[in-house]
Length: 50
Image (cartoon, rainbow, N blue to C red; front, side, top):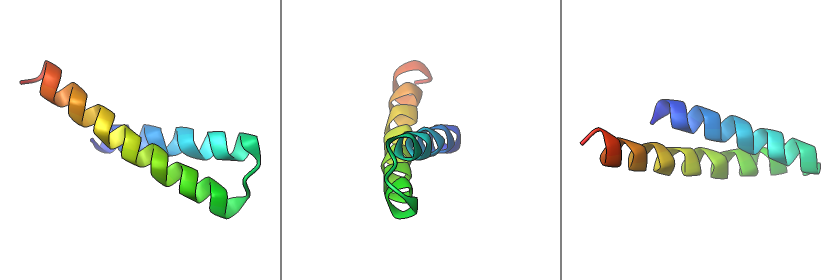
């Protein structure tokens, strides 16, 4: 989950920076990306490692 959170946060930050939201917008999009990364990592863990 840590890896998913890190990758999701980085991608969210990159997307927010590309769109040009500014520092606070980048932070918010990064937070959403981290949450999505956690959910994706959890789904992968449950489906493939169970």
